[in-house]
Length: 258
Image (cartoon, rainbow, N blue to C red; front, side, top):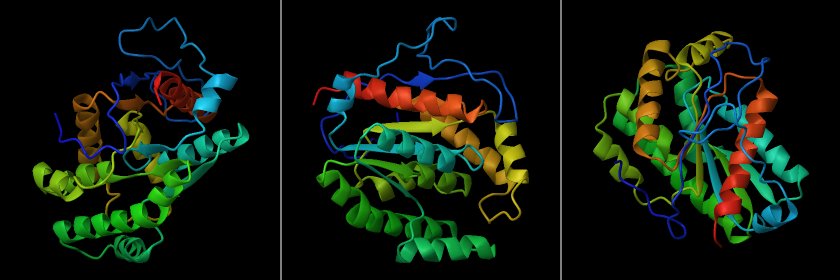
């Protein structure tokens, strides 16, 4: 099991979620129902929507969407945020690397494609995460907002390992950070991520296909080792995937004892 990060509140017993629609590249075809491991694929997940469920969600919740490049983390962070706002919930959407001092430096370095020592780069991500928590995440949680972050410490581990850094070193670098209440790993088939990446005009130094394949496998292994992570196949039509993620949020809220 990977080393767990400090929890913001008592740890929950959370089953993993695994969605497996047919493999497809385009994002305009239907995806399957949101399923728990071992569930009958023919049976859709019960909807958890309702006044009581949404009332329970009027508490601070920290949600993270993670995944390799091309998995749809930015899109689905935005769609989940919009859905929560639509339902009257107080939420914010944020991302890493941030637009803070370290995050801006990271973006500049990656876009330049200049070589950088992997350990130095990950230390910069950690510094950016410190700024992110202090200036964005914790203040919002203290105001009982729902915080949705596009990437968090899982990225440091997945990408850092792909760059040759020992996993234990990476975990130690991140062990002081609060743990999300709910984590979604967006993992369509690798070929889907690769095809989406090819549509981008320019790739940064962490977006090369060879490296991304290792990153992808690291995310898979992390999800297998941590059963609290909700693993979502985002190769289907985006509205269906967004519904699956939202129902995962509602399921968490309905089962959480505040």
